Image 1: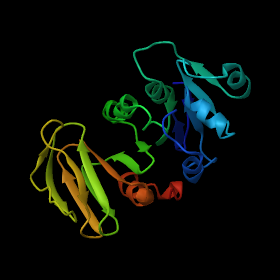
Image 2: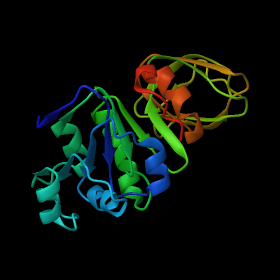
Image 3: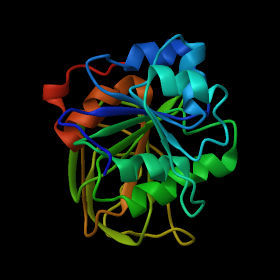
Image 4: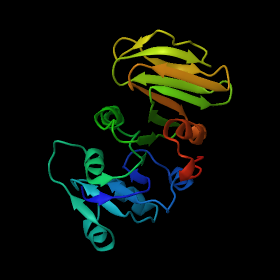
Amino acid sequence: MTFQFQSPVFLVGDGELSEQQFRSLYSDAHPLIAADGGANVLHDFSVLPYAVIGDMDSLRDRDFFERESRVVHIEEQDSTDLEKCLNEVEAPLYLALGFIGKRFDHTLEILHVMEKYAHKQIVFFSKEDVIVRLPKSFRVQLPLGTRFSLYPLKRTVLLSSEGLKYPLDGLTMEQGQMIGTSNETTETHVHIEQTEEGLIAIVPIEHVSALLSSTLNLRSYGSLDA
């Protein structure tokens, strides 16, 4: 482990990420780590990362970042740059921007990462959504009619659900068998109980603070309204 932090860490990849979205979410009170080509994105935003981690096959100006930041070059090709970041950085929470969009294979990678690193608290942001892994028992307060999608990373049984247009009680969700996308809230309070921590939730990004406070108890980390 190269870096250890007591505060949440922002991770930036070279996927779809606008400067407006980055600045609306990022707080310079927290460390900023670039996954290889994510450093190019930050450079375009005139922002310097605390460190750049990866195999460096996408980094445009390595000399600059070696002078101005910290470069951790990991040559092995058995893991992605995002995985390299998660292996080299220890933090209570990872807020991951720019890992979704542009390339579909990179988008699929986040499903792999959320299962492989289930022991780490990772939150992914796309242009429209926020994606988190849910605990066995989950409660959140959202406006009526909010899009609320669930996707199983592994097999789990939904013991009960409240506040959703399409009830989930007793359903078994598993990739290739049944998923729970495009549901929506019919009450302001949503409650889900599952047998395993197998589900991720996908919610419009404007509700990020409500979702994260419910899943990760983020009150101490301040507002993350996009």
